[in-house]
Image 1: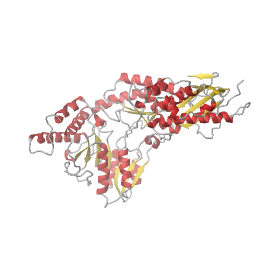
Image 2 (image 1 turned 60 degrees about the vertical axis):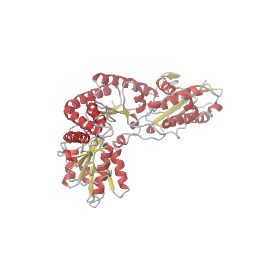
Image 3 (image 1 turned 180 degrees about the vertical axis):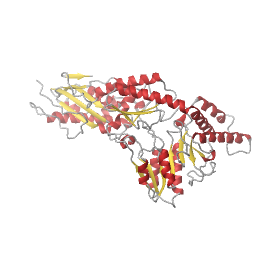
Image 4 (image 1 turned 180 degrees about the horizontal axis):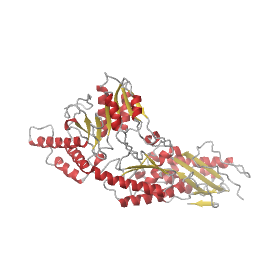
Length: 154
Length: 392
């Protein structure tokens, strides 16, 4: 029974204590649910996209302090970003923005990268003009989860 | 509140040790002069105190570097010494790694190991021990109490089964020593491992009780200082500290155990009444007086620790250290679901903990859990929506 939260830097602690952009949208344009509570971490990312730009990003997360901080930081990084630039965000981008993560916690930033990839994939799957649930086949669902549905925004 | 991991050295323990780090620096084996004689006398006094803790004879106490070495010496030493008689060892799934890894290593030497399951409280059924025995069984090793969930095992019943069949019985008492009464005669124990630092003594010193005439192959060879069962210049200051810690434990055990049990029960009452979805892990009755292990559904263990970090030092049931980590093997052996195993907190109360701290921690935990559950993507109610966006 051990923990490495004592190794976290100030930025990680700040985003853990004061997470930004927590929540979700009633009518998201893209949703990603990655990770698995059985492995200790799960991240849900919801995006609102307008004219090819991430207008707003929200997250929910179950996980350690680093997972919460990585989720929070990711939403701040991608807000206002063009979709084509979203592809350039990697786990290293997130880890560096956090001022670094302990080696044992780098997988938390990988989860953030996966969330972005999955959100983009979900966005592409959603054809304009119809409701579509995100494809959850690639990610395990936690207890109590329900399918998200996105509505075309007027 | 992490006294299962270690405990601070008591002032009276430190005071007893200091002379042997300064003027009384003699080698306990060098009894041809006063320096050595003083050291030797101090070691033997400590040996008596440790023996008294277990109702043993001083000659049955072997000083080691700690419980891990004691477990290694007991299991490997007894198994190898009994190799001509058999090759089967019975232990249980939730033992400390010092036992499990030693057994695993012995498998590579051709020994066979049965790891008994436990029930949902972490309890080893003595009948399951009986059923596991074979004509080739030589050793039974079941810990006195578990380090995570605090469950106290039915050692006397298991010891009797082993004794009736002429088998050696070892118990890892690292967590139980100094916290609950242990009587090697009443419990039919042949080998008992313990550590000083779990009971307010120094780190790096422990003991193995070895019943008279128990065959045991030494694991550390050299000068044969400990009746040839273990070699190495004796750590006199550490042993003196262990002796004093044992003396203090004998003196204070009853009162301190009752005090800690009352604090622990108050902590559980506060947590369980203020936070939904909390379950206690471990035995509801047969558990260490200072232990509380809880699962707080939909709140990750380390995240809870972080929220409490300026109020208490605690442990969780898992270490988030890889992308595919697994929760505590102890909790999983109890049947705790994989995701719930990541939501465990272990409280190990000790001498420094007070009623005020319990009140503070319970309140802080309640607030932390509420915050973390609000963050959770799958906590009940998380899917409810009150508007276009909901920012917590």
